[in-house]
Amino acid sequence: MTELEKLENESLQPSAELIRDLAEVDGDIMILGAGGKMGPALSILARKAILKTNKEKKVIAVSRFTDKKLQNKLESFGIETIRADLLDNTQLWGLPEVNNIIFMAGMKFGTTGNESYTWAMNSYMPGKIAEKFPGSRMVVFSTGNIYSYVDKNSGGSVEDDRPGPIGEYAESCLGRERIFQYFSVKNNSPTVLFRLNYAVDFRYGVMVEIARSVFLEKEIDLSTGFVNLIWQEDACEYALRSLKHCHIPPLLLNVTGPGIISVRSLAEEFARIFNKQIRFTNKELPTALLSNAGRLFSLLGPPKTSLDKMTELIALWVAAGGDHSGKPTHFQERQGLF
Image (cartoon, rainbow, N blue to C red; front, side, top):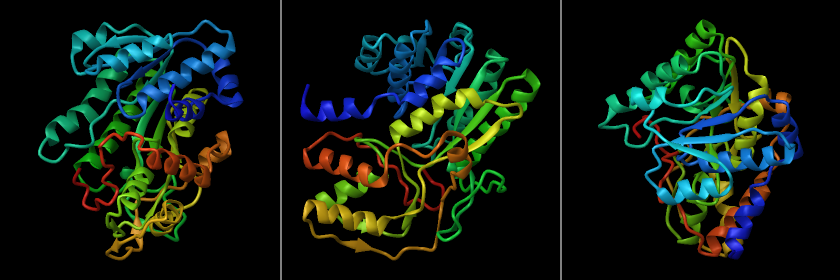
């Protein structure tokens, strides 16, 4: 195992709180859309935690698994995998019944020019999932994009704010929420709507883009000058622990780290660490997509990973030449065109 592999492995360990909470959740856990950016980490974290509970529970990862290596990796941890296209009725209805669902499937990048498929994935498919699994607990991944832009001094949008999605991706995600809200009541399905905004890991995320831009001495656009950030493992822990808090009608949870982060300040910190010159373009606008996670912290406590620790981990990874997803977040996009 390389030093970078060790660093990644050490960062993906279940907390005592996660182990305790999963011990109290009855039944198997199925992750739908487990092949995406966060799905593998969440699946592995769930499996590691369950092994420490000494309870007999399966973790079942469902995805199209176009990457056979990923499927093999998950199976090496003792995770059961199922290849399935969730839009295909035969494949969907062939899935086993389970008590607990983490729903992560969806479409974001490539929406522009492919809007109909985006709506099918984000709004139509959720109805099929809800009909397939009536009565199951569900933690449904959503996004802070369902809110409108708010001022950087506002503290961020809260769950009771009226949605104001910009663009068809965000609109279709609000559609996803409305469908699950309807079926939660109709089917007696306890649900959490998990509004994530923005998760960061070693290979992907706003911090990675900023760090790599500084390291390679590329210009940094400040048009979107303020963001929310949360370490991916913390977000995965929150999702799994949320199974204990599913509710009818669904509980709305903003999921992000504390505070509102300045892109300029973050870039300047990476420049200091890397000893690099930094170049900015444009000026910070006063508004951004910002969320307030106070309700989450009251329910499950603050995230384990501080901004300073996230910065340290990303800097180590980038400086050592660690690989990256090659998939930009487009966090600077302000017209909702993804």
